[in-house]
Length: 107
View 1 (cartoon, one colour):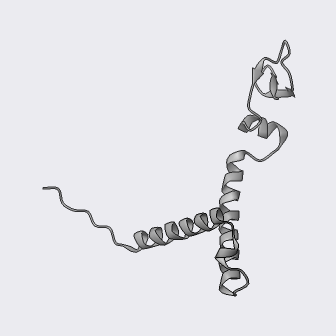
View 2 (tube, one colour):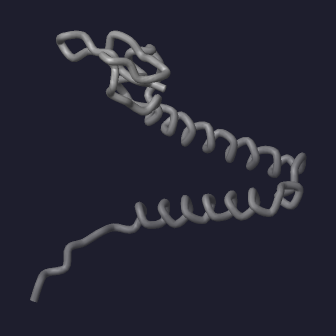
View 3 (tube, helix red, strand yellow):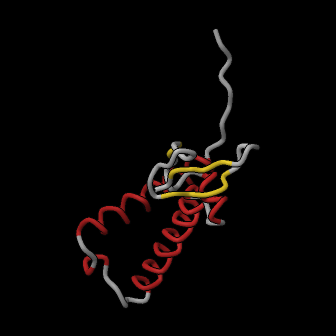
């Protein structure tokens, strides 16, 4: 799914699980046009929400470790690596943004 049946104006009129004579066009279920027709959020909106949620989870893990309710070593090794890598990346980005940038004249 979904095969698309369109109106004469080109708008989606129906979504079908199999092709029909008037519905041969196939669109991925995550296509923005399909999401609009079904009144669902677009998948790119989910990725933004996922990023925000990941940050919340990182902050929660930091809080729990600061209060000694959780040790980083309690987490699976892959989760430990990802958390450390993200924390390191954020630290480097913060340092980079604090460093003043100057243009060097071309010789």
